[in-house]
Image (cartoon, rainbow over all chains, first blue to last red; front, side, top):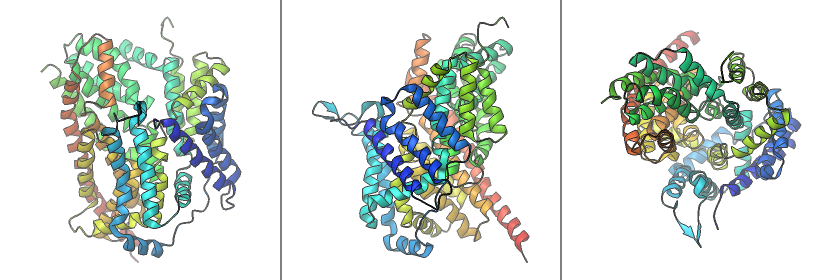
Length: 318
Length: 236
């Protein structure tokens, strides 16, 4: 039997359903019904997404966005242990607390590297298309069991804690997902082609340095718009990198590609569109300013981008 | 306009920009941009809903990396994981927030370069361990921190994880981005050894480390200044 990503979709669906139910019965949540509807709708996507007609799923997504957009997704009052109890528990358990926390990445890495090609009864053990995610799911389960064993808490308490964290992040949990949908729609509607057209049509590429700068800045700008370097790369490499840098100025394609992709990553560091890297951590770390992580990254991203232009200019003809 | 390329879908981009500038709810902005892009590309409403639905189902794997670890991490937090991490770091006398984050940057970038990208991450490492440790290191030096400084240290912790990951992973040959670049160049009739793409990433990887480590060093000075300013303001 193969452990596939579908199994973890069901697991996440059940977790989200639990979040919905716990919110529904929690009178300390000022918007418990809309909050429960939001997480219940998201649970439905994971539990039955492929069995529902796509148009309905599209409507479901818009419904969720409206709930989130008009303040319908709120949190209950979290029940945490008092500070001194928690401190006493930290002192009692000591460094053993780190074991489950480190088990998670450890199991993930073992799964993704050592168990990747293991076969069981003719079928691969882990879903070959999603080895890392499936390994991470196993790591999460192993860490939860180890944490329960260590603290003598029940897995149900783990679900309650997960609800506390999901509540704290609120709609930021689904933002990366919805932006990914927008990214796919952008490519379907030809936004990439339009941007590449504007870049190539209206900017003079007759100087070597300007061509390099347009390529690197274009990568970053395009990534800022799309939120994803992988979407920017084909457009800018196809529009400027290959025809102009390689074709006209004889650049080494490996250098063009490597530094081009890194320029795109500079854009990723500066855009709220890359929500899973920039907005979700701000919510996860309970920062009042949702753009705080981007603000922290700009002073590094801009100098790296400028350095990339010079690196590409000087290295591409070596 | 006599262009064969349809420029109207760019309106969707404009919606995003305006929405973020006006600080509207980002989920609402994203869905509004979906609607505008669809209309601008002349998609019928049903087709648009179907595309949205198909895409929403197809990208379900994205939130897993955030949602799966929450139960374990939340449970450990309940029983004092963050307090323990803070106690451990405050014993190291030479530790400062900036130095600690430089060590984490190095660890994150070098392990990502070896393909071990899942060793870090915001839910698994930054929230339970790295950010509390960086805060505790600054606290051991300066006493209680003003909320603004605390938030700034947390944001830098998240930024350090991102920068270490991004500029490390591309140096690893089997990483998806390298495969993508190789495929695209091949489609254009250019044959490149993927190993060369990975190797030519190294100059930028080193530059990124130096630049961000420099900013992390400045973070320590910034904390010192902000704590002093806050103490001056709060004096009776």
